[in-house]
Every structure is written in structure tokens, then in C-alpha cells.
Length: 437
Ligand code: NIG
Ligand code: FE
Figure 1 (spheres, rainbow, N blue to C red):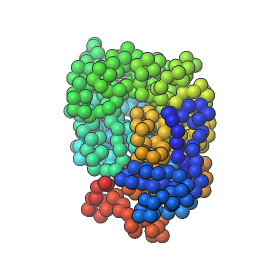
Figure 2: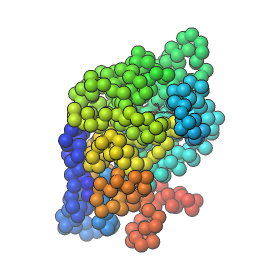
Figure 3: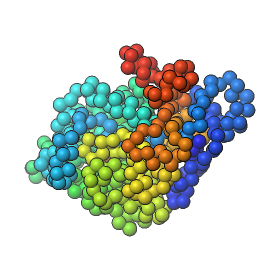
Figure 4: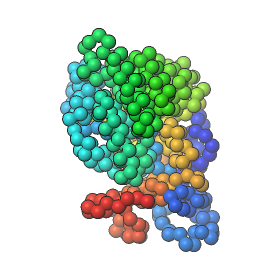
């Protein structure tokens, strides 16, 4: 059992400290961890006598993944662009021709809430099947008042109707939408729409916790990003930022100055940025799925960040343009082979440090008394095999707040657990939805 116990976020050498307990066990009460220790310690507790026992058969148990960067709500894939990219077109070239984010915006605006909800529900089921129990979700494919509020409203609804916890981020500043382009002052007018109308409205309705900006060439400048993030702060939305993904924009320095929860991507960061991050509490969230999918050679300098003492997290960046995956285990594999992170480091970056990036470290991200019983069970002998088997899902069971939300199909027949515990998703497939308590 990898507990990831300890104080504060993991930096430097501490990133590979997993707090392993051999023959571990947990006592769960009302969805929270009431005790954690060795199996004999837990079994000797008085309260354990009346508890339902779930034997995980010696498999590897860890805190459920905390995926701190996703663009959950989108209408469709961009497989057509994928082919263009393989043939040599760059992400920016495609975007300039009206593809890219703007193409996803067009698709989303033409899609009903119900269709978006269905697609997201399917994705959330998959996130759970790969061991994720908490995820962040960004708006940003609506880019007008009604569509952005529609996406954020869906985050709220989805939180009620399925077991994974969704933390909502407002990303109205993804790019300048088509209707504001091609005229003088268009971008400035859109920034005013964000700061004067949308951000106050999102805050009033309590629809997001964070405000994000895509600060890059072709999106928003450092100056515009500062205005938008400050408006978010004034309205109680904590900043986070898409920083130094395609070009060096200065977004990392800005994020650190504003006390951002995280700076994400960081492929193009320099030594000064690394130093700034390492001296701050801003999490450096790395998204190697983007570079893999786009076929880019330059990954973020994870080793330099870790060695300098920055708080490094890993996330999928699940989105149709740069990272169409919801598999945290695949991200861990990429982090090992491309970012040269050790298997242990990838697990800490995907659990406790992800929780820290979402300011949820007191509730999730480690298996400790008082925290939610959110866990992922992997059908492996050694935790290093989670990233070692790439593109293969070795997740065997996922639990959210003490409820089993996923169990591997082929194992059901021989498992005593499946017979005694409700699996809400399967019920839903049969047409009678059960909510998780
Ligand atoms: O995180 N960089 C900006 N946003 C996304 C890509 C969005 C898209 O291409 O649809 C990202 O990579
Ligand atoms: Fe992103």
C-alpha cells in the first residue's frame, strides 16, 4: 500500500517517498479513512470486527489519481487535424486556418447540453477505470456568455450525478473567439467581456474555483493574461495558467507573482522560470501527453524542476486538440521514458502533488486518517509495473469515498467483492441508476 503520507507537497528527493506499508490495510468509515496501517494492526481494531472485509489479493493500492488539468467538456474529437499534423502541419498553422481551438468552439456551440453531458459521462467513467478519483475540468470551448456558462453548469450537474469529484476552472481566456477577430480592438473587447461580464457572473453563481488563461502566441499576451487573472482574483477565483507551451511568453513569472495554484505545460521554460517556481508554492504541472500526441521533441525539463525543488505534478490535459487521453497510467509511462522521472516520482506527482495543485491536499491525494477513502488498486506485483506496462490498463478496482466505482470486468466472476457491493456504473447501464452515497 502506497500511502503517500507526510506533510506538505513533495519537492526534490521527497518526491520519490511513497510511504509504503507492506501488507497494508485501511479501515473506512462513512467514506473516510478511519485507520491506516499493516493488516494485522487494522484487523486487531475493535471496529474492524463488524466491518465488511474487502480482500484485494495482495495487489498494489495507492491513492486515486488526482488529474489536475483537463478540458473535460468538448463536443467531438479533432481526428481530421491529427492526420494533417502527422503529414507535417504544425499546431499553430492549423489554428491560424480556423482549425484548432476555434474548430472545437464551433462544434461545441452547435451541440446540445444533453449531448455534451452524455459524452462527458462516458469520459468520466473511463477516468475512473484508469484509477482517477478527482479531476479538474476547464471551460474554454464556448467563448461566449451562454456557452461558457453552459459548460460550467455541466461541471456542477456532473458532480451530482456521478461519483468522481470535478473541480471547476473558468477558461474563457482560451483564445479570442472568431467574432472578435479581424477588427481593431477586437481582442481588447473580448478581454473586457471576460473581466466585466463573465468573470463576475461565474463568481456570483459559484460556478468555478479557479481562473485560467492560455498565455501564448496566438492566444493571450502576458499583459492581457495579467488583467484577466487579476480580475479573477478580485472575484475570488484563484489563478492558474497555461504557460510556456509553444513559445516563451513570460507566463510562468506572471503566475508565480500572482500566487497561481499552478503553471501548466512549461515545455519552453528557462533557468529563471525554474528558479522562480522552485522558490514558490505554485505547482509545476507537466503534461507530456501533449508533446507525445503532437509529436514534439521538446518535453518540459522535469529533472531540472525536481532537482531545483519545484512542486512537480503530472496531469493528462485531456482535450481534443493536444492530448486526447484520459489515462493517468499512460501519462506516468510518458513521464518515465520522456521526462526521466522515476516510477515513484510519477506516482507522487499524480496523487499528492496533483491534490496540492487543486488545493485539495487536506482531503485527497494520500491514504491517511481523516482523508477520503479514494483509492486505485492495480493488478501488478510491483508499483513500478504501473508505468512499465504502457498503453495497458492494469487498474483493477477504483474506490471513491469508500464506494467501489470501477472493477475490472474479467475479475468480477471470481471476486467476492462484486457480489456484495453495488457498482453504480453497471446499474446505470441496465437502466436503473443508483447514486453513490
Ligand atoms: O492545454 N494550450 C491550450 N489548450 C489546450 C489545447 C486545446 C486545444 O487544442 O483544443 C492544451 O494543450
Ligand atoms: Fe490545457
